[in-house]
Length: 575
Image 1 (tube, rainbow, N blue to C red):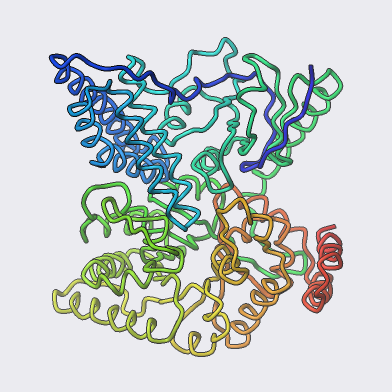
Image 2: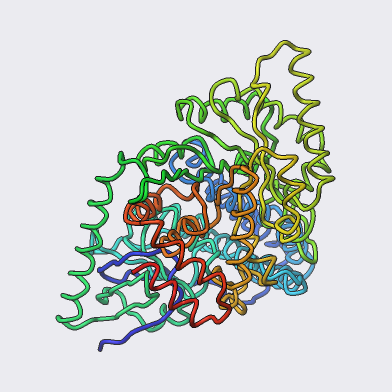
């Protein structure tokens, strides 16, 4: 029987293959009593399972360090190790076995419920969503106790076209599944910012989440069409639908091959306006993908990923080597290093802060200024790397002039310490600020007088302006980059910077979305930064754009406050 399921498409593309079901969660366990003389043995069985899982995580972490997986995996594994080592889970379960003589599985499940109840009391939606991480860790320990450690499913008889279907996937799952070469991921749970979504996008394979009952409705070996663009799955399609999607799939592959031809072509509009297309990266290893994309610089080096995959903090020399490596490999092209944007959902191991509103709390530059020693170490490392290329410093989440003054003072102090030690650096290194808080967007004049350049972070700018948590499914439909207020704010920032002759770029998700490319060009933007995988698609749009035709339409969009009229104008703009 053929039918269609609708979910949330989190990674674009079309995949055609056969369903392969991951083992369902093993979270239903028996409750029985252990003879008194067997209690120590039962506790040892629990300890052994925790040891096995810890070794699995450590092995997976080593694969990250060795460069076989992306940086996001390491941050997720850190979180799972923290949960594994939480006394509320392990020690409390041991005590329950000793006191009540219950079996280890039951004790572990009871303590999991205690942790889940604590997460339920957290107001922040992102942190509440981490309940899934607790369940994934417990499931892994349970499987180890049952003699089935790890998550790898039985090998599918369909090699090369298997589509993985699971109730939910942890980062550890996906890292192991990656070696099995699945062509798509489908899950019952998840959101645009769930682990599966992030990982699927990094692997550049189609993925759909929030399918709710796919794991129950789809059978092993069912023929599937996964349309990541539309967020739909067609189960057991008929011949005509299958032929149509194979044709679409072939067209997409052909388009990708055609795009590679423009890698070395200068990004320039039809009227001769040059556009700088830069790349966003997390680690030095990402430079290879940057080179493949043809990017002319690094518009955003997310330095916090250097901090997130370890027990200790990276020292000055280690940071310096990472920054220097990127600067050297970019051969004098711009490298903009954002100082660490820790806090909210990105924390150091052992430093998770459960705040009522972490996205509005101690994060980014606020954290840096609260930890001057840690910040000083990073600033020295960046400055030392600046002699090896066109390195720039970008300050995240600025909201007032006092933060700018404090930051510039700390940069000057870092320069002084290097001069005293006769260590070379670029005395005239450029310092810029991210405009991602409405207060900063509305007080640009003072920012532009103090800073050398601006970078618009649309992800947070949209979230804060519209008061919409962008990772909360319940309000996800309200997260609208094309909201009149957002279009006006972005226009205001770009035009103000252009009038003041202050360089301005945009590094949020809007930069990599081709439907916004002409809008941004028409607003006067001439530098965009995005994931390397998005760059050629955006470049293609740039090469086909003629600013004298675009600008009048964009002016109409800015003056229109009716959503339907704005969408119609946007469609006309992209026609």
